[in-house]
Image (cartoon, rainbow, N blue to C red):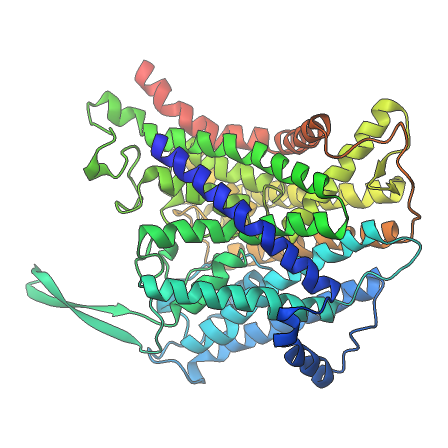
Length: 583
């Protein structure tokens, strides 16, 4: 437990140290400052505007901004859908894969366009290199940039007053990809390649076995392994909180995550940009103490839940302990604990940490089998998503949702002291609370209604292979993950069916756009308000009291919405072995 605690602390500390300068750099990018990056890439940026006919000086109100965002995402989704259907007759298909089946193509297009990256297929044996590069990798960049473009208008709405201008979607998108995502991904991809992540257009390679074996009466002397352009996709997959793996094993595959160093860097990458955006908020809103309060609130939520997950993974299965099977910390057990579904080279504690980082953000990547985790460890994954993607959260979208919770906390605080609530100089009135409440409550409705449909219909139950509490947990996870644009999954559920393709596809689309359109409307209302100077009754947004209030609101909303479902799933499953042992 000590080693995993040190690993957790090292990742969080390094992330903060890197996020501080990155947040300052991003502030200069979005402010339009002239500095070394714009001198280097400025001609490319201006060339893009000339070709596309975009005026960088023209700004949009929230409705135009939202329409541009929706149209851009719609075009990207339709293009990806068509590409997947037609991949069988297109080039860069060395393994000669056929076109993707229609339901799976729709689900995948919705998944990667919304930054969910839920996969109902095996990537290494389903998609051509053209689909992986031109389809999935491109959408990894664009969907991550879309998340940031959701956040920027909200921050500008807090800063500006008596206007309708919230920036230009096309400018924000261009600068995010050009100045932030591309340079970071290129650097990270080079590091991954140096560590052994594959990057090639070759279809497959043959490896001679050190120890040949007999199978079906034949002596197997070699193994054929799929390869591909993995490092370039892996870099933006982690930095952009995408999570869709090139191979079905995701980051448990040695071609995606070959060493302890890559495992460490990939965990840092998941929370680097979400953390940097917190400091970007502090710079843009001139509220650096509030930014630190946001980060502290996230850590207050993340650290205890991570320790709970690690504890149960490292403690292991109580039934095995009762049977006299050792799950102690030894070199052969890579840290001991529950080793089912865990890579020996990674260990159960590091797998639990990777899982909480992947579900606290919207990354959804996996370096082990989440379905094989101890029930409460898997329950922590579920709960982190069900909090509303606010603990670090997805790139941009997570902080946007966190700000919605802060506004709601300000509203509750205002009611307590009998004053009109204010947030960073903006008065919070009925319309703002309606939009905030709508953005917070859409996700729980999608999860609970979707789960109810899955467990009460024949088509939904047909995909469940495990009975009882664990089977229910798998269904709950299969709806929670797409509705939160996360993309991770429990195994043991047949999700590549018409029912689950449509259900999860609609959850991904509605969970992305129905949640964040109210936030853009909120930004449109706030930007028109005048600034109010802080008074004696103003609720300060960086005190320990306010941090506690915000964390309390987030936990209360999550617990009230999902505790009954969690009690039927992971909690009941965790208690079941204990009940068996006592009888």
